[in-house]
Amino acid sequence: MNFQLMGDLIRLRYKLMWARTRTRNGKIALFAIGYLLLVLVLVLVGAGGIGAGMVAVRAGKALLITRIVLTSLFVQALFATVMLGFGISAIFSDVELRRYPIRAAERRLVRHLIGIIDPFWILTLALDFGLLIGLYVMGAASFWLGFAAILCLVIANYLAARFIEAIVERMMKRESGSMLLMVGIMVLSFSGAIIPLLLKRYPGIAPAAVSILGFTPPFGAGAAMTQSGGAAAVGILVEILWIIWLGFALLFLESRPMERQTSESTVMNFDSRFDRVAAGLGFDNAPLLAWWLRFYSRNSRFKALLVLSIPIAAFLTFNFGARKGGLGWFPAALGTFPIVTFFATSRFMVNQFGYLGGGYRRCFLLPVAPAAVLRTGSYASMLLSACFIPAGLIAWLVFAPVPFDGREIVMLLCSALTGMFTVHALGLWATLYGARKGNYNQSLGNDLSLFGNIVLIGGVMLFMFSPMIWKAALPVMLDPGHWWLWLMPPVVAVMFYRVSLAMASAALTGRREQLMAIVEGRA
Image (cartoon, rainbow, N blue to C red; front, side, top):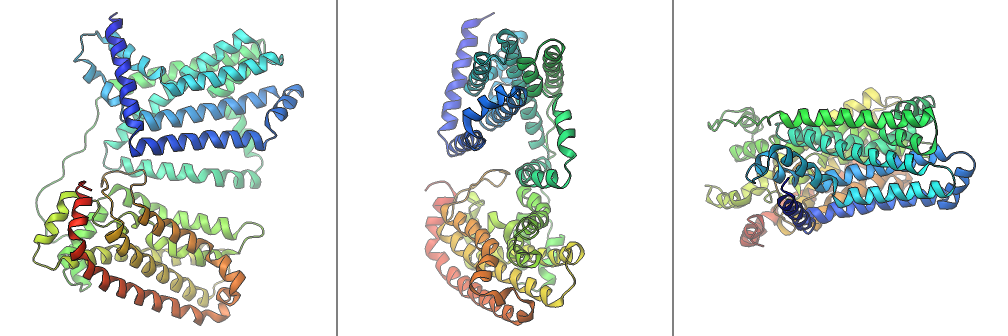
């Protein structure tokens, strides 16, 4: 074994990880990890703190407390390692390590040794060990059996993280992988609000879920730490079986070559469905509009949000309107319908030129005024956003548990149009004065400027809580009997959009050099 070279590779790993944490994405990842740790501490404090844990142990609930804490630490370490380790591990792939004078067994050992001595695994091991010491001092755990359970748990946690990382890496190589990953993350994000509602409505789910979780490594480790005899042996056996299964699964994935995306055709086609739509609707500069439509449709994040927009709006409507003491279904829908009209296109709506890179320079070589590029980009975003309005109205008519009322349909339509024109008008100004260089192929993360985030997050919050404002300040706006009051907001929003479009088009030429420097990464 060449331990000196293996040590050099391990030191290189830490240098690369430190360089990564100093980037913008690294700082965001550190913030997310700190946030997860804060949530874990708040949950502990909210549950009564350490004193309540000691009382629970003395009351014979040591197994329950141990399983909850170990599961929280397991998930925390899993997400932290995947977020910070993604992309770095590719540098130490088997192909790259072949450049060093080490054998195949040493390469495999180096790769996994580099992963297992990651600071987050050391932190996880320390936290698990601290839990064991606390239980041992209180006489609720066996030290040596618990220590063996913790070592097995950390190994299983590491293998699970590497397995998930390998799956994510292979998904990103596929054309639809990033979209599926985005959908999965969104579903996971909303599960925290959906699961309590399901448990409240179907209480039988909780015992069944606990029975299934009993075969997971954290629950097995908890049983091994706090139980004795056959129960402890079963807990250790569960961990060992997980280690064996994850080890073989990881070896299987690593032995399979990556599937690369097929290269797209470079043949120019000026008679696609986008060109026919743009020409059929009578837009000026129809080829430019068709180009922007292709620009949207080929983006993985847009395709993912295209699928999620209506379900997310339905979830928000249910969360604000169906719960006890809520606004009610219809007032909540008045606030969520505008969000549907810009959620999917939001990334490009407030930063049209930020994803063009050096291609933005070509916009000034076209035989049209530069403002035409800005206008057609905004038109394309609104054209795609407008498709969600009839889809949302149909979903409301089919699934909303309220009697049909034509006046409510008119109010929902006016609310959606108001949101679409208002936010797209603000998006024009964000494009000019809040541009930021972005990565078109990035499916996750927030790469918008402060101005762009203010427009999007502020727009979502404003529309989502607007029914509460109407209810407190002007209740007649929520009354279908005064539906005609909603005819004026869309008119004002259209005027605001037209004025913003004219003024932004005039200001584009003066912002040319600044925008070019930003999108090309020179500013």
